Length: 440
Ligand code: ACO
Image (cartoon, rainbow, N blue to C red; front, side, top):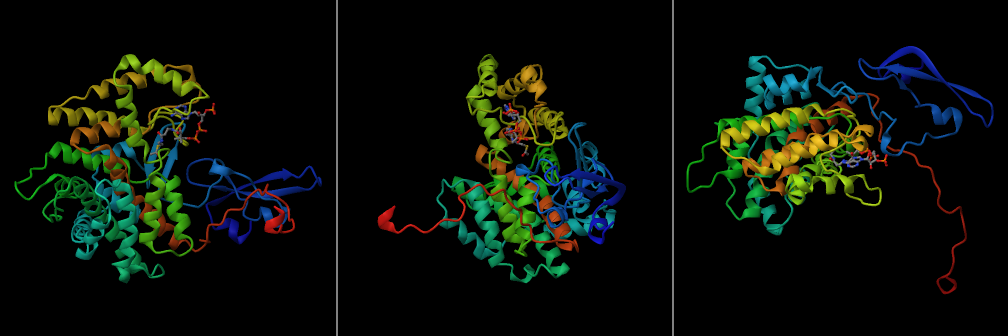
């Protein structure tokens, strides 16, 4: 086994042989074993030895990195952070503890937890000058555009944490991003509704503080409902990390060039915004509103199955989960808790339950293994709490920041890290002569 091959995973005492039918030559590739998941064929030397690239748009069969942070078994519906199941973390842990776990690899003891929370709490204010950025946006700007712009702009304010080769600066940048994201997100909301920004409060926990910065107004006291704060915290846990998804891979790819952490996280936010990824929570609630009542469901199911109709059931299906997304189970339970605490109901929840029931019994969805994902129920919770749909993806970004930061740190600390640079199957014109303007 070569040095490079043994540097990732564990050699699986096994190899993979490919035969090139053009030349009849056989190539033996090393096989690597992770602690969980399928074996991985190491193709790093493939091009050098065979003069061929592998072709895998969408990376459906390609591992882009080695990671110790999160594991997903999509067939079994399992999600582990540093080995701990998402169900146990959602049930027993809190978001600050999960942040510590993702960043450091182990659950904190009492003193470590206290210190971490203290650090995050005391980094939650943003540079006052940064608040003036908001005025440059239109009041009706989508808050994701504000979040993306302001996060990228952080590099202009926190110049003492841009040196990615210095572990201490990386740590400070990580803390700042996790601590300030709720403040930046809440300010995006406040700006859109024309209310004054609310400063963070150090006597409140992370989720409580975010709710206060979002919903408090200076003219009256704001009481954080503990059930809502708990639901918010759980929602953050459920979105904290999800291995090499589109936005995380974007963060890693941007960071692989040595870009500063604020720019990388802004890139992640941009990628998350798309409706096939984090934007699905907004799209899912809009879809439920469009469907309205359960009697309209068959029409939309038919549309989702129609190959000639671009409509998809938003909040349904996942690249990795081919079983129920374990996060959706927790979300569904949380909807009921929030409804009970706020003494509200939402007929859209009944529509969602009915839609899930019909889809999970329809051969199209069963055969394609399409189940509700984390976004199917999250919008109902957020809407009940009082967030407009445009804030849904912002909340996802806020929670995912720790995952992005943990994955970015892991990449930078990896001695085998290289700039990400995929190859291509070129199908454009072959070389040809330039044609003068008058002859075209
Ligand atoms: N509704 C209807 N049909 C669907 C859906 C859906 N939601 N999702 C997938 N399919 C069908 C596709 O049409 C395709 O059918 P075909 O094989 O006959 O062509 C098949 O299932 C496989 O779909 P792909 O798009 O190839 O699967 P991929 O893994 O690339 O996409 C994705 C996964 C993007 C999540 C997709 O399921 C989707 O668009 N879902 C809706 C958006 C959504 O909820 N995204 C959130 C994902 S979770 C997250 O990011 C937090």
